Image (cartoon, rainbow, N blue to C red; front, side):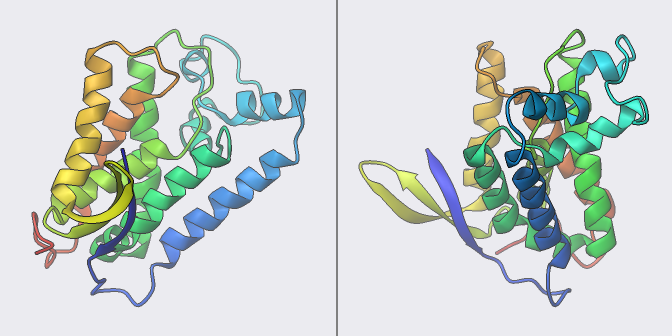
Length: 227
């Protein structure tokens, strides 16, 4: 329905959001590495580094013996299924990540991002206890960034490419854009959608991001700001 293009929300505490851009660069590099793999090698990398619920629960052995079961709660977020999957996640991270890095600080933002990835994976695991298919993608971690943004900057203007009759850029408050996004995730969970989308990972990451942002933000960053 829409894609974020950019926001009108200047950073105030840092000179440059290098952690956000480093995460984007690292994730793209990981996908470029994936792209060198063919057939069974691609599938093997996804199985070894993706988050598989039954493996994390130690019901099945870890495909990489040297990798701890819990490690895939983080590694999965740097793998993607295809270019569209990658670019959509990185677009959201590019639009919203700089302000959250500004609000938390560089080190806290990195820890926040990784924690959101883990929380999203655990939410997916909780509702897919017997899952044998690997979870991949940064969408859970990016959902955490979006959850933090709606808590800290709900009134900031986000320019989105909305598909009404023809795609046109529209400025909307972050609350409406991100609120619509999370409402969509909840809707698909409520109707029991069987689409191959990790709805619970999105919801878990979003909720985790809101909680962690409230705990980790700088003292002079107010809640519900962005006017």
